[in-house]
Length: 101
Image 1 (cartoon, one colour):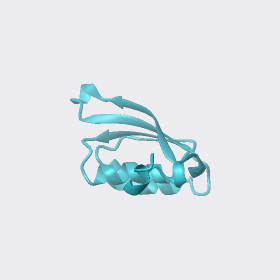
Image 2 (cartoon, rainbow, N blue to C red):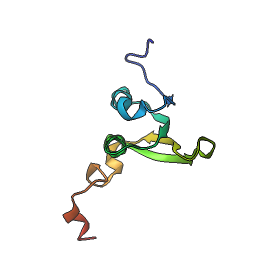
Image 3 (cartoon, rainbow, N blue to C red):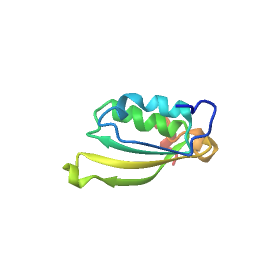
């Protein structure tokens, strides 16, 4: 599509379940914002999806349940920040580190 070596400001996708298997490709493209509709959050895919986005610098800035679809999906907005904004560059600290808080 001609997007190689170009900045993507906003990436929007609603692909009816492909979000759980294609998200690593989005991360590699490094868009500034990702808008995605998620469907039914299967484990462990959903955990890996959210952890991977967060650990590469994406934060949730918007979340909206999709009630017309039966409430089984949600629309998320992610914003890319530098990982310096995160504790130890990631939110997911080993359990021992939480004991001192």
